[in-house]
Length: 382
Ligand SMILES: *Cc1c(COP(=O)(O)O)cnc(C)c1O
Image (cartoon, rainbow, N blue to C red; front, side):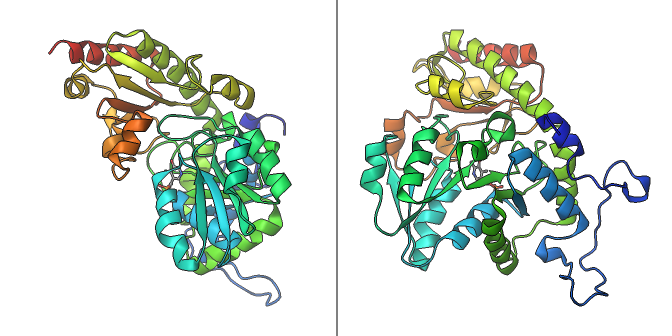
């Protein structure tokens, strides 16, 4: 099947349909008859019920990988993967800008299993070379980083991982398979928080691990032991959501571009961070790597603007963490993802009180731009 849209609708669907049902029903059963003792048992924690199997096939078609596994959350996908790939005494390298939960996992949990890490501040081959050790086993990356929306040099990272014989792992949550398929670049394991764009409606928690079958076997075994499986009802919700992934994400790409341009023209805005704007430091790289620039837009207000007045005057965006859903969400990263980051480090990155992150939803482009403009006007009127 050729396009992502066709695959998202048809891949993994049972043939023939179950009782003729066009959509796959929910098999809310914890266990299954086991008449043939030679066959592997079907059990809910083994992630192998009919809902899991159909979903795994659809996700493999979307991520363009051999095999996939769904988990209870994005963090379950990340932790099961790293605990599968790394042994006591191993080391991993990663860029400094990473999802907060992942950084906490590196800092607080992995050291208890004698797994150490080095974060690389500069996105250059020399910086990566300086960070690598004889026991380095994994290179860990994110395709678009939060909240400055940097697009790292993924091609250089893969070259580096190949020369150093590292397993290359990437969290592709922000880009989604619509905008980037990291397996094409050579990444070994692709991770998603499906709570975000894949789920797309802010109504479920799930994670995805995708990659070669032999590697996935280890992750499946670890997930079985840690117990971070996905419930069949959540499988059903995610399965349903994937059928509209292409239309949702492409629409979000377009709206985000329009919103970013509107914001960049407003007097209350100092700087807009969107990979689709030529002012973004990684714009050229984003153009080369991505099929779309994504639905996340960050910006900061000018020092004279009143941030509280801006938030109070908004009527469409909902002030809430997370991203990727149909409702536009807005946050101040100093109160969410970067709450525990050292103030000096935050300020060096430009993440201040005035710095705002938007997850663009599916509202009308004009409505959203107008609402943001009105609120920005209000921020200057006090
Ligand atoms: C949200 C998020 C996660 C964690 O996902 P959960 O589903 O909340 O566990 C991991 N990585 C990125 C980039 C995220 O945005």
